[in-house]
Image (tube, rainbow, N blue to C red; front, side, top):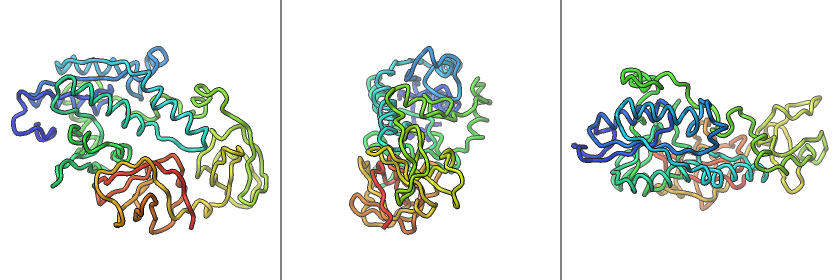
Amino acid sequence: MYNLFQLGENVHGKRIVVAMSGGVDSSVVAALAAQSGAETIGITLQLYDHGAAVGRTKSCCAGQDIRDARAVADKIGIAHYVFDHESAFRGSVIDNFADEYLRGRTPIPCVRCNMGVKFTDLLRLARDLGADCLATGHYVRRELGPEGAELHSARDPARDQSWFLFATTRAQLEYLRFPLGGLPKPQVREMAAELGLSVAAKPDSQDICFVPNGDYAAVVRQHRPHAGTPGKIVREDGTALGSHTGLINFTVGQRKGLEIGGQPEPLYVVRLEPETQQVIVGPRESLAVSRLRITEANWLADAQDKPVLAKVRSMAIPVPAMLRGEWLHFERKEYGVAPGQAAVLYDNTRVLGGGWIAETARD
C-alpha cells in the first residue's frame, strides 16, 4: 500500500498520522496506513460541544463520531488520541461564520476549518509526534510534479473536494497525503467492509458539522443575539416589495423564501446591503456578472494572465476565465456569484489556487 502514501518503496520505520473524523473515508485511510507496515497513529480533534453532540451522526469531530473513530483504531490495532480544540474552532470557524452572515456574505466554514484547526493544528500535532506525513480521507489527489507536490481534483468528480482545499499551502502539501483521491466512493465502502470496519455503511456527512439541521440563521442568532435586524426587500430601481426579518436569512441567487408573491416574473436575491439592511432583488439576468475580485489568495502555481478554469461554488462546473491582478474575468457571464464564497482556479485537474470572493461586477 506504500504508493498510496508516497513515502518510498519501504515504509517500515516510517510513522503516519491519520486524521480520523469517525467516518468511513478516514477509517479506511487509517486501515491502509496500518497495513502498509508503517507505524500508524490516529488523531481526532474534538471541535464542538461534547454534550450537544452526544449521539449525533452524519457530522464529524464530536459525540458518536469520536467513539466510532476510537472503535476503528481499536479494530486495526493503532494508537488513537483525541485533542480538545473546541475553543480554537469556535474562534476561527463559528465566529467567522456568524460575522460573515451579518456582513451580508455567504461563508464557507469547511474551508476555514481546513485552513485553520484541521490542517494547521493537525500538522503541528503530527510533526510533534515525529510523523513522516499526515494522511486524511479527503477526495483529492497529491501528484508529484517537476517543482514538487501538486494538488489535483479527485478522479471521481462526484466526490471531488479540491474546491474546499484551495487554501492548502505548498508547505502543507509537501507533508499531506490523500490516499483516496484516485478511488470511487463505492470502492472505499467495499474496502471498509472487507476490512471489517464498523463504519462501512455509515452515512456520509450531509450538513455543516455545527449546523446539523441546516438552519444557518438559527446558529447565527445563537452566537450573535443581535442578529436579525428587519429591513426592506426592494427591486434594483428602489421599489419596495416587502419586508424581512434579517439579512442572515438570505444569500445571493436565492429565489425561494422571499415571500413577495404576485410579481410578473421570478425574482432572485441580487445583493445584500448590510448598511441599509436591504435585500435587493431582480430578474435572473441581474445575477449575471462578468468578473469578481479575489482577496486572501493562496497560490500553488502561477495563474496570472493565462486561460484557467474557475469554480465559484462547490457544485458548480468550472468555467473558462482569466486572472488579471486581483480580478478574475469570465469568458462568459456567470450567475449567482456570492461574496464570501471561494473562487478556485484550475489548469485541467490541477488546483492553481484561489481566494475569497470580495465583490463582483457586471461590466
